[in-house]
Image (cartoon, rainbow, N blue to C red; front, side, top):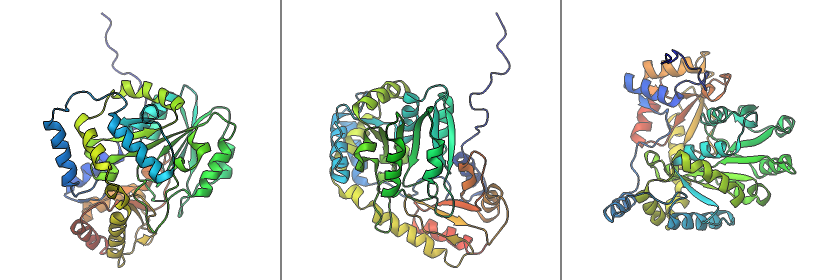
Amino acid sequence: MAEFPDFIPSKLPNIGTSIFAIMSQLANKHGAINLSQGFPDFDCSDKLKDLVTHYMKKGYNQYAPMPGIMPLREVIAEKTESLYSALYNPDTEITVTAGATEALYSAISAFVREGDEVIVFEPAYDSYVPAIILNGGVPVYGRLNAPDFKINWNKTQKMVNQRTRMIIINSPHNPTGSMLTAEDMKQLEKITKNTNIIILSDEVYEHIIFDKKEHQSICLFPKLMERSLVISSFGKTFHTTGWKMGYCLAPENLMSEFRKAHQFVVFAVNTPIQYAVADFLKNKDNYNNLHNFYQQKRDYFNCALKASRFKITPSSGTYFQLLDYTAISDEKEMDFAIRLTKEYKVASIPVSAFYHKKTENRALRFCFAKSEDTMDKAAEILCKI
């Protein structure tokens, strides 16, 4: 028998452990307040938990249908039509997924082939590029420039060519909290007109938007809808990130391909939770008031930091706030984030981690999906730096 080789070349040679895992582990090691990873430190609705228990006890504990249970797909269709006047067929155009990350991976796997180019705007959520590379694609990087982190559409147009298979957008944007406007969407429509480019729209924070701004979903633009897969997350909306429950919307021709990948990544998603979420979604207050809930938290956190030396440009959406530390230190972001965790006991995420070349903005990302007590303790420390 031939000896097994000592080393098999990595398919992701430049990808290490996720920055979220690194900073959370560092926070745990040093007993720091963890404002790095994006998860709430408060519980979800008791009603929602009761519904999960109810369906478990009723025996809904075996495989769900591959695309998700029909009652949930139907209520997703109703929700989407109510919010965006967009019609998706629950039978053929909606799939329930094991969180948004699985949906993103399945979408990229379904459409990106060897040598295909995918335009990604940096700073970018860290799951996009590894999925592109694993499927043989080539990431092409656009830049969102500080401080407003807007897309330069003239430069984007020049990036498009016959090899461009997909453009990935994310609004509200993680990590910066910026948002795409209606004009941005019109520019995207113009760039993709008369092409075979697919749009992958990450809209997991669609309900977490501030200052009376409106979410410009792909679903509001019919010409974009016909070439797009839209990803959303119940984990973000219902404070249940550990349940890993999301969904994908797409026209039938795209969804049929998406499901081919989805079924071999996860096949089906948690059955009793699907039934519980289907019931919970019927009350629109369970998601329509989320922006008020999180705006209060954003404002509370930023107000508590007024006496600090950090520069604050209030987030427009998501539950993340960037803090510019230019007036405090000239250290690189990773170095400052590590020192902040070890010496001051507050953990954050360096924005440079969201760039393939670790571009520096001297800004850190803090999660404010936390209790007031947690935010008070963190702000008291940050104001002393």
